[in-house]
Amino acid sequence: MTSEHLPDPTEQSAWRPLRLLQSAMDDDIARIYREARIEGLKPSYVMELIRLHVRGPMTITELAESVERTHSAMSQKVAAMRAAGLVVTAAGDDARSKKVLLTDRAVAVMDRLMAEWRATEAAVAEIEAEIPYPLGQVVSDIEAALRRKSFHDRIAEKLAEDPAWS
Image 1 (cartoon, rainbow, N blue to C red):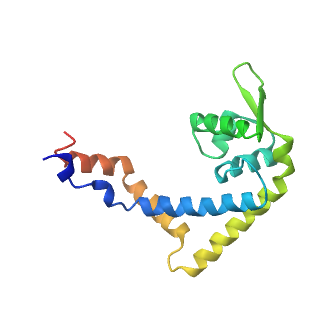
Image 2: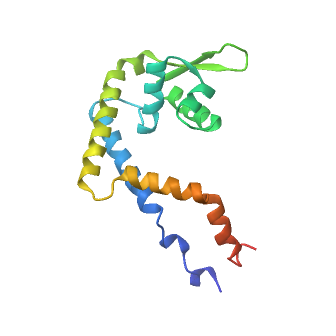
């Protein structure tokens, strides 16, 4: 069978609608920033920026742990935020660590970022009140199911049944 006759498994996805929804909501938050003329800011930076503002300078490891991310992912995000002029890094307590600090530019918009965070959380709560099954409950139910059997184990079991995987 040639590839032109193979069914495309990506045409069915329970996962994609959730990713598209989150992306659309993030795009709306980014639009808020553009309308407020806050340049170079991505919605994915805001939690870390607020965390640095509230808790003060942190190492990449400390920042990663505080927002439950890997060191590698946080290192990449810090590099992107540094390129956007939102943070700088300075030598840490030892030669191997770097402290992440907010720039004056980030501090100047911090009250607005914290206001946006509160408004976004209030908007999500408003949406949850309008739907019969709140997102927070969905997440809790999925987490409980994953405690019973991990996502990895579920995928591995399905792959073990698929001759194409062997």
